[in-house]
Amino acid sequence: MSEDSECVCSVGMKLSWDINDPKLPQDTKQFDVFQEWTDGYVRYIYSAEDKNTQRHLSGWAMRNTNNHNCQILKKSCLGVVVCSRGCLLTDGSRLTLRPAICDKARQKQQKKLCPSCTATLELLPCRGHSGYPVTNFWRVDGKNIFFQAKGVHDHPRPESKSETEARRSSVKRRVSSPPVHPQETPDGPSGPWSRPPLLC
DNA sequence: AGATGCGGGAAGT
DNA sequence: ACTTCCCGCATCT
Ligand SMILES: [Zn+2]
Ligand SMILES: [Zn+2]
Image (cartoon, protein in one colour):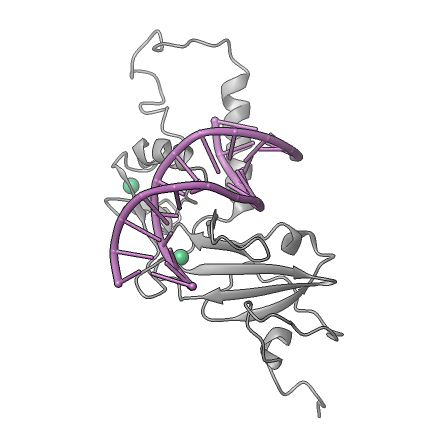
């Protein structure tokens, strides 16, 4: 049957290292493929050629956090934005918006209403690492990008970054075309669209 | 407008 | 000392 494919571990997990080690493995001949939804206490060795790893991307909404170490980039999880009423969407799923990374944008986001039932939105914080948010660490070393995660997310996945970007540009298109009326609409909530302005 | 990175600083442990 | 969090600034899309 198969030969060396018994170990299902990542390339990073086959070697023993920690993101804080003064010297990291150098002679790596193999890379892990980018993992969008990492969870748990995992370690990967990525290629420094990969755009996704260069940009320190994740499906989870991770924000940069200052660890006072310019060699190691640290990010922590912002959790997920849900409907406070937990309503079901048309496809039977529940709303799981991606928290805005920018603090100011996130405060604005939380004031919006559920696009489905108009209830208030709620930010579920991540408490997956000893009660604190899950953290991701990134460190570039030569042709390698070392990745280490600490904690297990205790909340649903947010909408992915690409989904959020797609929706943002769709909203932008919808808002930019018609002549701008800064105030209210001429006729109130009487048209065929009884509740229009609830887009995220 | 918002994503992302940097870094000073405060506060908790 | 180490971690978490807050904030302003800068760059890029
Ligand atoms: Zn709702
Ligand atoms: Zn999380």
